[in-house]
Amino acid sequence: DVKVTQSSRYLVKRTGEKVFLECVQDMDHENMFWYRQDPGLGLRLIYFSYDVKMKEKGDIPEGYSVSREKKERFSLILESASTNQTSMYLCASSPFSGNTIYFGEGSWLTVV
Amino acid sequence: SQQGEEDPQALSIQEGENATMNCSYKTSINNLQWYRQNSGRGLVHLILIRSNEREKHSGRLRVTLDTSKKSSSLLITASRAADTASYFCATDENTGNQFYFGTGTSLTVIP
Image 1 (cartoon, each protein chain N blue to C red):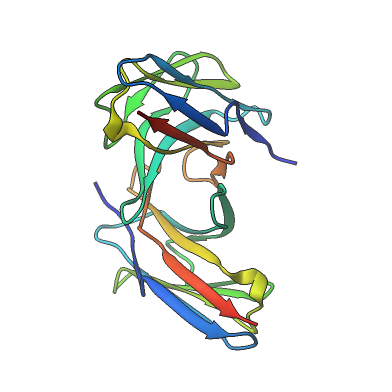
Image 2 (image 1 turned 90 degrees about the vertical axis):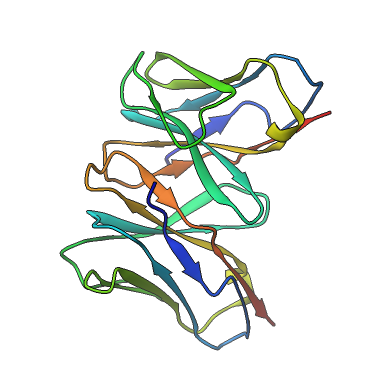
Protein backbone atom coordinates (compact mmCIF):
# COMPACT_ATOMS: atom_id res chain seq x y z
CA ASP A 1 0.00 0.00 0.00
CA VAL A 2 1.01 3.54 -0.70
CA LYS A 3 2.27 5.35 2.38
CA VAL A 4 3.11 8.96 3.08
CA THR A 5 4.19 9.48 6.66
CA GLN A 6 4.31 12.81 8.41
CA SER A 7 6.51 12.67 11.47
CA SER A 8 4.41 14.77 13.82
CA ARG A 9 0.64 14.76 14.09
CA TYR A 10 0.35 17.61 16.57
CA LEU A 11 2.90 20.29 17.43
CA VAL A 12 2.82 23.38 19.59
CA LYS A 13 5.62 25.88 19.00
CA ARG A 14 6.44 29.36 20.21
CA THR A 15 6.60 32.45 18.02
CA GLY A 16 10.06 32.84 16.53
CA GLU A 17 11.01 29.18 16.82
CA LYS A 18 12.40 27.27 13.85
CA VAL A 19 10.05 24.43 12.99
CA PHE A 20 10.72 21.34 10.94
CA LEU A 21 7.92 19.23 9.48
CA GLU A 22 9.16 15.95 8.07
CA CYS A 23 7.55 13.79 5.42
CA VAL A 24 8.61 10.43 4.05
CA GLN A 25 7.09 8.42 1.20
CA ASP A 26 7.86 4.80 0.49
CA MET A 27 6.69 4.63 -3.13
CA ASP A 28 9.73 5.98 -4.99
CA HIS A 29 7.63 8.90 -6.24
CA GLU A 30 9.24 11.69 -8.19
CA ASN A 31 7.00 14.53 -6.99
CA MET A 32 6.40 15.68 -3.45
CA PHE A 33 4.25 18.54 -2.18
CA TRP A 34 3.50 20.57 0.91
CA TYR A 35 0.04 22.06 1.28
CA ARG A 36 -1.51 24.16 3.97
CA GLN A 37 -5.21 23.78 4.80
CA ASP A 38 -7.25 26.45 6.54
CA PRO A 39 -11.03 26.65 7.04
CA GLY A 40 -12.75 28.33 4.12
CA LEU A 41 -9.53 28.52 2.10
CA GLY A 42 -9.14 24.92 1.01
CA LEU A 43 -5.69 23.53 0.31
CA ARG A 44 -3.01 25.94 -0.78
CA LEU A 45 0.27 24.78 -2.27
CA ILE A 46 3.35 26.00 -0.42
CA TYR A 47 6.17 24.24 -2.28
CA PHE A 48 6.64 21.22 -4.46
CA SER A 49 9.61 19.20 -5.65
CA TYR A 50 9.90 17.11 -8.79
CA ASP A 51 13.34 15.70 -8.09
CA VAL A 52 15.99 15.47 -5.42
CA LYS A 53 17.40 18.90 -4.58
CA MET A 54 14.83 20.54 -6.86
CA LYS A 55 12.05 22.76 -5.55
CA GLU A 56 9.43 25.08 -6.95
CA LYS A 57 7.38 27.71 -5.16
CA GLY A 58 3.66 27.25 -4.92
CA ASP A 59 1.08 29.90 -4.14
CA ILE A 60 2.16 30.80 -0.60
CA PRO A 61 5.90 30.18 -0.12
CA GLU A 62 6.55 33.24 2.05
CA GLY A 63 7.82 32.32 5.48
CA TYR A 64 8.59 28.74 4.44
CA SER A 65 11.47 26.84 2.92
CA VAL A 66 11.89 23.19 1.94
CA SER A 67 14.59 20.58 1.67
CA ARG A 68 14.75 17.44 -0.42
CA GLU A 69 18.12 15.76 0.05
CA LYS A 70 16.80 12.26 -0.61
CA LYS A 71 14.06 11.15 -2.97
CA GLU A 72 11.85 9.77 -0.23
CA ARG A 73 12.04 12.71 2.17
CA PHE A 74 10.64 16.22 1.85
CA SER A 75 10.94 18.63 4.74
CA LEU A 76 9.05 21.86 5.34
CA ILE A 77 10.85 24.48 7.39
CA LEU A 78 9.36 27.49 9.12
CA GLU A 79 12.39 29.69 9.69
CA SER A 80 10.73 31.83 12.35
CA ALA A 81 7.25 30.62 13.25
CA SER A 82 4.47 33.15 13.52
CA THR A 83 0.93 32.83 14.83
CA ASN A 84 -0.52 33.18 11.32
CA GLN A 85 1.22 29.94 10.42
CA THR A 86 -1.04 28.03 12.80
CA SER A 87 -2.65 25.54 10.44
CA MET A 88 -2.89 21.98 9.24
CA TYR A 89 -0.02 20.99 6.96
CA LEU A 90 -0.41 18.20 4.45
CA CYS A 91 2.41 16.43 2.69
CA ALA A 92 1.74 14.53 -0.52
CA SER A 93 3.52 12.68 -3.29
CA SER A 94 2.80 11.50 -6.82
CA PRO A 95 4.69 9.21 -9.20
CA PHE A 96 4.82 11.75 -12.01
CA SER A 97 3.07 14.87 -13.16
CA GLY A 98 -0.65 14.70 -13.71
CA ASN A 99 -1.12 11.55 -11.70
CA THR A 100 -2.85 10.63 -8.48
CA ILE A 101 -1.59 12.46 -5.42
CA TYR A 102 -1.20 10.51 -2.19
CA PHE A 103 -1.52 12.40 1.06
CA GLY A 104 -0.19 11.95 4.56
CA GLU A 105 -2.45 12.25 7.59
CA GLY A 106 -1.54 15.87 8.22
CA SER A 107 0.33 17.79 10.90
CA TRP A 108 -1.57 20.20 13.10
CA LEU A 109 0.73 23.07 14.02
CA THR A 110 -0.18 25.63 16.65
CA VAL A 111 2.10 28.64 17.09
CA VAL A 112 1.62 30.48 20.37
CA SER B 1 -3.39 30.36 -9.81
CA GLN B 2 -6.24 28.24 -11.06
CA GLN B 3 -8.46 26.67 -8.48
CA GLY B 4 -11.51 24.46 -8.66
CA GLU B 5 -14.58 25.74 -6.89
CA GLU B 6 -17.00 23.25 -5.40
CA ASP B 7 -20.70 23.80 -5.07
CA PRO B 8 -22.56 23.56 -2.75
CA GLN B 9 -20.32 24.38 0.19
CA ALA B 10 -22.39 22.09 2.40
CA LEU B 11 -24.89 19.33 1.70
CA SER B 12 -27.02 17.31 4.09
CA ILE B 13 -28.99 14.26 2.92
CA GLN B 14 -30.67 11.15 4.30
CA GLU B 15 -28.99 7.78 4.08
CA GLY B 16 -29.93 6.06 0.83
CA GLU B 17 -30.31 9.28 -1.15
CA ASN B 18 -27.95 10.37 -3.90
CA ALA B 19 -25.51 13.22 -3.38
CA THR B 20 -24.33 15.46 -6.18
CA MET B 21 -21.59 18.03 -5.90
CA ASN B 22 -20.14 20.22 -8.60
CA CYS B 23 -16.79 21.70 -9.45
CA SER B 24 -16.08 24.61 -11.77
CA TYR B 25 -12.69 25.78 -12.94
CA LYS B 26 -11.30 28.63 -14.94
CA THR B 27 -8.79 27.51 -17.55
CA SER B 28 -7.95 24.48 -19.68
CA ILE B 29 -6.92 21.34 -17.87
CA ASN B 30 -5.31 17.98 -18.58
CA ASN B 31 -6.85 16.16 -15.64
CA LEU B 32 -9.38 16.66 -12.88
CA GLN B 33 -9.42 14.62 -9.70
CA TRP B 34 -11.84 14.17 -6.82
CA TYR B 35 -10.68 13.56 -3.27
CA ARG B 36 -12.36 12.80 0.00
CA GLN B 37 -11.29 13.98 3.46
CA ASN B 38 -12.64 12.66 6.72
CA SER B 39 -12.56 15.16 9.55
CA GLY B 40 -9.02 15.90 10.67
CA ARG B 41 -7.43 13.41 8.30
CA GLY B 42 -5.50 13.47 5.04
CA LEU B 43 -7.13 13.41 1.62
CA VAL B 44 -7.89 10.16 -0.15
CA HIS B 45 -8.02 9.92 -3.92
CA LEU B 46 -11.37 8.90 -5.43
CA ILE B 47 -11.26 9.32 -9.20
CA LEU B 48 -9.11 10.93 -11.89
CA ILE B 49 -10.76 11.95 -15.15
CA ARG B 50 -8.77 13.14 -18.13
CA SER B 51 -9.79 16.01 -20.36
CA ASN B 52 -10.69 13.68 -23.23
CA GLU B 53 -13.06 11.66 -21.04
CA ARG B 54 -16.66 12.59 -20.32
CA GLU B 55 -17.65 10.14 -17.62
CA LYS B 56 -16.06 7.66 -15.22
CA HIS B 57 -17.46 5.26 -12.68
CA SER B 58 -16.01 3.68 -9.58
CA GLY B 59 -18.38 1.67 -7.42
CA ARG B 60 -21.08 4.05 -6.19
CA LEU B 61 -19.23 7.07 -7.60
CA ARG B 62 -19.88 8.65 -10.97
CA VAL B 63 -17.88 11.60 -12.24
CA THR B 64 -18.69 13.65 -15.30
CA LEU B 65 -16.57 16.26 -17.03
CA ASP B 66 -17.78 18.98 -19.38
CA THR B 67 -14.75 20.82 -20.70
CA SER B 68 -16.88 23.24 -22.72
CA LYS B 69 -18.50 24.44 -19.49
CA LYS B 70 -15.33 23.94 -17.45
CA SER B 71 -17.21 21.92 -14.89
CA SER B 72 -17.34 18.49 -13.31
CA SER B 73 -19.77 16.72 -11.05
CA LEU B 74 -19.41 13.93 -8.53
CA LEU B 75 -22.43 11.75 -7.86
CA ILE B 76 -22.52 9.38 -4.90
CA THR B 77 -25.40 6.96 -5.20
CA ALA B 78 -27.20 5.23 -2.32
CA SER B 79 -25.29 7.26 0.25
CA ARG B 80 -24.24 5.84 3.60
CA ALA B 81 -23.45 7.50 6.92
CA ALA B 82 -19.81 6.54 6.30
CA ASP B 83 -19.80 8.83 3.24
CA THR B 84 -19.92 11.83 5.59
CA ALA B 85 -16.78 13.79 4.71
CA SER B 86 -15.52 16.76 2.74
CA TYR B 87 -15.05 16.32 -0.99
CA PHE B 88 -12.57 18.29 -3.04
CA CYS B 89 -11.89 18.62 -6.72
CA ALA B 90 -8.38 19.27 -7.93
CA THR B 91 -7.44 20.60 -11.33
CA ASP B 92 -4.07 20.88 -13.03
CA GLU B 93 -2.87 23.54 -15.33
CA ASN B 94 -1.76 22.44 -18.77
CA THR B 95 1.73 21.72 -17.48
CA GLY B 96 0.28 18.99 -15.27
CA ASN B 97 2.92 19.64 -12.65
CA GLN B 98 0.65 20.97 -9.98
CA PHE B 99 -2.88 20.32 -8.86
CA TYR B 100 -4.92 23.08 -7.33
CA PHE B 101 -7.69 22.29 -4.89
CA GLY B 102 -10.98 24.00 -4.23
CA THR B 103 -12.48 24.77 -0.83
CA GLY B 104 -14.54 21.59 -0.78
CA THR B 105 -18.11 20.42 -0.25
CA SER B 106 -18.97 19.21 3.24
CA LEU B 107 -21.34 16.25 2.94
CA THR B 108 -23.37 15.00 5.90
CA VAL B 109 -25.33 11.77 5.49
CA ILE B 110 -27.94 11.35 8.20
CA PRO B 111 -28.62 7.74 9.25
